Length: 237
Image 1 (cartoon, rainbow, N blue to C red):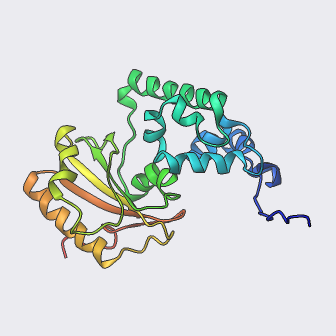
Image 2 (image 1 turned 135 degrees about the vertical axis):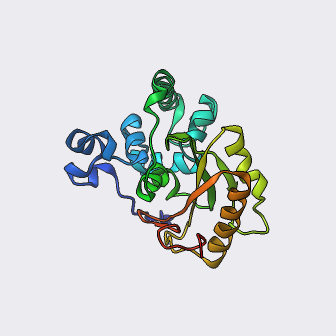
Image 3 (image 1 turned 180 degrees about the horizontal axis):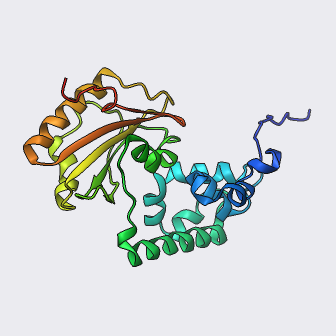
């Protein structure tokens, strides 16, 4: 008796409309308009059997916790992911190193964050596909230039887990004048929970004591975000 092979529907890049494919989109609208996953898919060029380059890129970003994790990963660790191998791992590391050298050669070109949309766009492509909640902070200097975006926590966001001192330690080390807190909702719905609001309230109070201005708390979902500052949740209530 022939064993039945499970059927899995998987959208491949060749199944996308020509204008929606990452390489074609890059040529048409420019690299800034592409998500991090799309840019990574362009570097990978092709996927593996049953998995598109775009899906493979998304898996890598989740597996290594975004671009910072990919940057820290070794070629051996990258090559160990199904569908990557040595050639693609080397391509990824080369692209990341070029980006690092560009930033090092032009520190005056650090990104600026002057609005909730700026903050969300800086992190959304990396965080919206994460399967666990991650809490990150955007560290800013007095000119609202980004000094870093470290991950502080992984797992459910609640006041019993978060230690205020640990969250602000990164800001103190970077000599940051202000910070923006950001975390994702794996469900894709960025609606703030009562716990999100409670955490925000505590962090705002702590920031005033430590002279580090907490500008906002951004909740990231799938292609959507909510600014607690815009909704006045946890800020000057």
